[in-house]
Length: 115
Length: 112
Image (cartoon, rainbow over all chains, first blue to last red; front, side, top):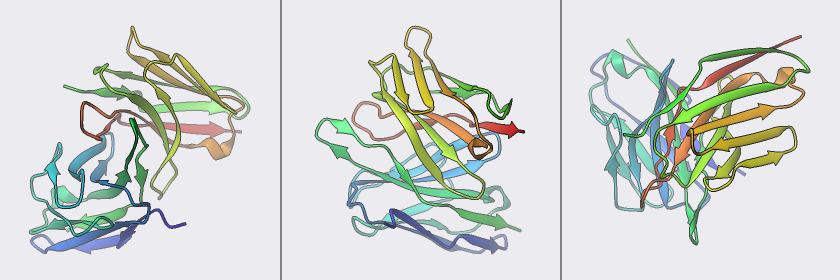
């Protein structure tokens, strides 16, 4: 019963390096999200995807790009990492059932440090 | 714009009740949620309430919604050390988007 799977769990990068955070869900959800979590600031939405082939900016998109590869997978890319991007990154997914929305389900997070 | 606020810390004695509070600004959301985050883990959905309800009870958890004051609370009865975690309030979705707006989280510490 995997739910939302994120890889890697931990990563340390040097300033200027690039990397891609992977996320996959097995619940057949249409919507997927990327958040970052910083102390005292809660979760802030970076990008989201309402369906396969569509992506939209959230609250803090600068410095990030995303790809909705297929219905299952939604990746987050840092092209040139900066120390301000040190954070814990969470992927989530959700769906609608008729007229009601289902809650978002979260992965366990990727802890990213930029030196 | 939308904003959700919570106090940062709450400390309670084991066996007492805990009450975690949340205020929000946008009353157009469909649901209000409570998530729990244990150390090193992701967010786990605890409970949620439809925006036209006043109260929801689920075992030790009671959610109260005051729409007039835009205030949401989570009461945990008989708090245990295993309840120590960060609790996030969230509201959404809005209009035709599935986005949620999260509060800053309340760190609950339960001491013996």
